[in-house]
Image (cartoon, rainbow, N blue to C red; front, side, top):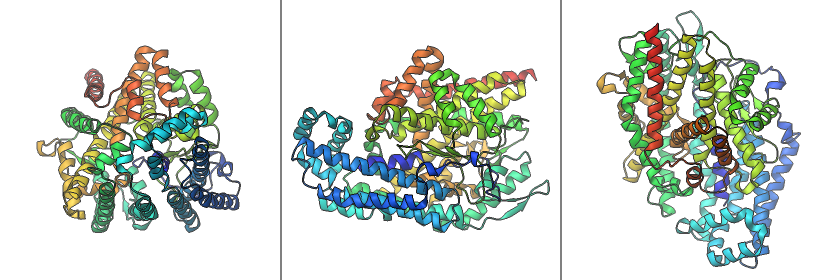
Length: 622
């Protein structure tokens, strides 16, 4: 049961790379735009006391071993003790993680993050006996206890899921042994994160306007969208050239992760890593396979977009470094207060209760808003502090992308709030498969709102182009990543070697196919086939495909909101309120979307074509 909590928190607080950022040297910002971690713990000493208190519970948990079958009350008491310990452990971990992400250069905060990871690893060790013992007690007895003691209802889904996991649960000794290695198993991700975020000495370049820029992840994300094509190429060549120097090392780190996960899947009697990852959420393999098949079938739509981009940018041949500049310029800024106001106004389509709750939350100190030197890049929402509230990390840069990111992350936060209001802690953490639906659907709502409010054809083209780019980046790009990740695991499962060079070859083949390189749609230079090195999500085990499925589901649910009004809104909210109370595929089917069928994916491609039709009409008038 604990296996479901930890991945949920980790997945929901993943870094969303790729936002245009500018870093401040000074951390001297208005406290109103930083999060207030004293709501978690007033001091570091209080955090340390809480961590020690969590760890003091481990002996009590282990003392419950062998008692689950004694009575329904004994089962309840054990599960309650573990649940309460998990709950406080998640809060302890949230504090350490957020504090560390404020400045990745701080050894003190990084050590606290490591201490919280050790705490969770020890918690895993202390509860390693739980699943095997539930299986020994057996379905018949567990079912009788559920009928006998209504207090167990909050644990029903977890218990039934534990029973479902019988074929992949090992004996006590084996489970305990694997638990001892849990922290070591996460080492590749830890090493990669430190290399990517703090260890590489990033070069400085002089741009065409004479300005200098450090081409780290933030500089790359910022300057790759430059209007000057020579600058874009310089930024791409500099960034990927520096990554190339580390290809052997990063390749070894990623291979270590892939090999570890392949071995763990085999140890638990799964057919493959894909089988394991889909089994955790009881997802049919048809979801993954249908996504990849349908997105590949829709590549002509993606290529149509690239050809439209080539035309609008006024270039003869599109290269990979021409992906990011906006199709038209927008002379507007969206500071944080403006972004909050626009987001709230756009969300009126979701009803007064939504807007009232979001307005109250968005004006509290739940967010760390602005970039600063050493701060974690990208954006995320961390839901771990169940008894407090979600926290959001942003790197707001006063542009439209920052506004869209704000809406996206508040989709996560509102999901967390609706789930927490309607679910106990034990079923409040929703699956990753569901998690990205409200975030992507809020982006869609915002895009339509901004397009309707546009004051000129050019402004409308900007928002429509942004919508296309969102679909390219999520529906196509994330599926490309998913196809690549699956290819890595399948190669490892066949016993093939995965060097950095080989990984770049594999990535390059897929990258070029998706972008129509052989047909002259987008030229991909060989240097850019090292892009896989920049993607942290490959260390989270088949995570990325869920961005694409979520955008697809979000598009379908938003269509119901537009078509059905209040009925569609209630259907949408009911999905959020359900949290993790059932398997995500079931929850989504109950909401009217079957992700194992081609229809939802084809609707996304159709929407993308409709947007391009509208843009071509506008361009025809100019």
